[in-house]
Length: 489
Image (tube, rainbow, N blue to C red):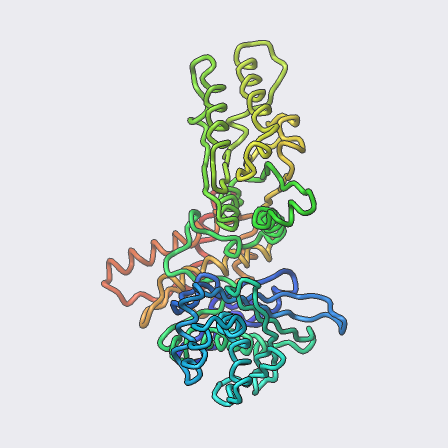
């Protein structure tokens, strides 16, 4: 397997307070954070007192030069539950309980704040909290400190007392995977202080830029992190997702997010998949409109269908992405012909224009996306700014893009299917060579290359009853050649 582009991630596993933590591709996470924020631990399962945990790695220019920023957020369950957990786990609990019962507002805030603020109560009562903790604590300054590496995380609290925040910065030239591991440990320490000293025992956490799936990734479940070979397109879609996720910032500046997006490019480049990934990134419902839902052989039927689709869209009460796939087959070029067919096409296009004019004002929860392989077939007035504000070209992937697609698809298959005693891929894979051999192929083509090899192995397994060797480099190259053969003949 090529060291420059390994398929199996470089993992480091460590234990913390009885939990097993698997840190995947820490160097890749740090490199990606130079380009944009990387979110980790989202969606993991936590003790009952903790609702959610999110660790974010990003890059910024500070007073002392470029630095990597590590930030963590811990969402806390309702205050009464957290309060009872804290009060019940140490000798100060009884005293604090009596003060809370007596209505002492200062002590109540101390307990509700959890973590560093709770420790201030220890110090106020002359007790030593830090000596009992596995990570050194400088509570007077509101910090957690890793005694081995010296990484210090500043702690702050949401005014509501339901979110604990950690923040640490490391100069870019000094940062290394140990800093990421250390910050994850500090975050887990904060979880322990909220949920109790044994609350993480027996749990397992994977810290990965790309959450490895327990089942194969499908178009329905895909996220932007799992899209390979289209970094520029993904970057644009992340910006659109941000405009959806932060309406308060949009309102503050009087900004309007895009109402419509047109994606165009050759077949098989992943336009529909990108739409699904964008919907998942936003947390939006996904509604796909296909040609038969609109076009009707009866006079006026198509226009009525368009109006009904948009009438429904104005009623959606949750974020919804509406996809008009193969848009050119639904709304062809609105020509100037006088025959009945041209008049029908113009009527459908005209209704579509009218409905798009004020959709975002009527319902800001809706985002319209249209995809086409033939943008020249779509009337320019139909997709002008104000209707489709963003136009994104989705090209065939270049060599680096194809290597990235192979890497992500193969890694997903490994995560979904490999188990003790069974390996689906050999160790001789060279992603660079695979990318060179698959020149001109799309993501859909690469997926078909893998499907054919998987099927051949499964048939061989069925015939022999097992003992089938993993898929190797030669077999993948052969599948690429086989798929490309008819295209070059």
